Length: 565
Image (spheres, rainbow, N blue to C red):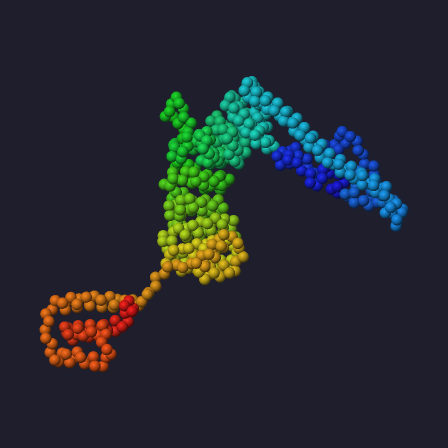
C-alpha cells in the first residue's frame, strides 16, 4: 500500500530545485530517503492488529490512527446519538490530522535541506579528489602514472556529470602526452575503449584525447577504425557549424592523422600553423572530405547517420564550395536507394531544396526515386521526406522530365490520394501536380476536388490543395476560329492586295456591251449592291473568266470571315 508510510509535504509541494537541481529536490511521491526519526522521536501508537480490526483504509493508517479508532469506538457505543456524544474524540482526531499535515510539510523542508547538505559534502569531497588528480597529472611520479590513469578514467564514467567528463578527458589527454611508452602500453586498451563514449556526440576534450592517443599510438586507430571514423565525421560536422578556429583546427588534424593531410582551405578550415615553418601546415582537401563521407554512407554501421549529418552541414555551411561536387554526391546517394532509410531521403530532400533540382541534377533521377519505394508512401518512416523531394522536383523541373514519366507518377499519386485522402504526403504531391506547368501533362483537377471534398486533414498541404483547386486555370492552346477558314482569309487578303496593284497599273479600256450585259445580269436578281458586290463588279471588269470563278469562291469566304465580322 502506497500510503502505509506517510509521504512528505502536500500534493502540491514543489520547489525550484525540482527543475534546476533534481538531485537535491525531495520527492513527494515516495517516503523520505533519511530516517524519519532522525532528530526527534514520533512512534506510531496504534498497532497493526487494531487497524486491521477496525478495517482502516490505507490512507487512514497514519500517526493519528489511534484517535480515529477511539472515535469509531465512541460512535459504535453511542449510536444513534453519536453526533454530539463524540465531539471530543472527533476534535482530538481533527487536531492530530492538522498537526500531522504541518509535520509533513516540515518533513519536506527537512528532506530538502538534508539533500542539499549531502550534495555540499559530496561536492567538497569531489573537489578535493579532483584537485589531487590534477596535481598528480602535473607533478606525479612516473611510477604512479597507472593509478593516475585509473583515477582519470573514473571521472569519465557514465554516472558523472558533463562537466566532470570534460575535465576527465582533458586530464587523460595530458597524461597521454606526458606518460612513458611503457605506462601507456599498460592502459592503452582501457583508453581505446573510451572511443565509443566519445563517438555518440562531439566533445572538444574528447576529440582532443583521441588526437593525442592517435599521435602516440597509431595502431589504436586501426583497431577501432569504425569508431574513430565516426568521431572524425562528428568533428568535421562541429567544425563546419562552429566559427571557432580551434574546433576547425582540431577537426582538420584528426582528419589528417587518419585519412589524408591535403588541403581544406576551400571549406574555410583554418589549420594550425607552425610559425617556425609556415609551409608545414596540416589541412584537408574538399575532395577528401567528400570521399570520407561517401565511405561513411556506404558503411552499414553507426557511422552512416553521422555521415549524412556531416553532409547536410557541409551543404548548408559550405554551399558554394560544394557546387562542383554536388553531381557526384547525388550519384552516390542515388546508388544507395537499394536500401533507403530516413537519413538518405532526408539528405536528398535537403540537397534538392538547398541547390534546386536542376543544379543538383536530382531531376534526372525522378523516376528512379519513385520506383525505389518498396511500399506505399504513407507506410514508410521516410514518406514525408520523399514527398518533399518529389514535390520539389515536380514544381521546379516541369520542362526537363518526359511527360510520360509525369503521367505515370501522377496516376499512381491520384490512386493513392483517392484511397487515403487524409495523408498529407499525397495531398502535397497532388498540389504539386496542380501547380505543374507542362502542357503535355493533364491537370488532375477533378481528382483534386474530389480529394478535397473527402479529406479531414487540416494541414497546410490540404489548404494549399483546396486553394489551387478553386483557382486553377492552366493556359491551354484553343482555336478561336477554324484553321482552314483562317488560312483562306489570309490568302484572300493577299490576292486582293495583288489585284488592286494590278488594276492600278493596267490601262483603262472601253468595255463592250456584251461584257456589260454579262456583268449586269447577276445584279438584276441580287439584293442592293454592297461593298463586296461593287468590289466584285470592279474586279470582273478587269479580269478573265478564270478569275471570276475565284471571285465566286471568294464571295463565300468573305461571308464567313470571322475576323471582319
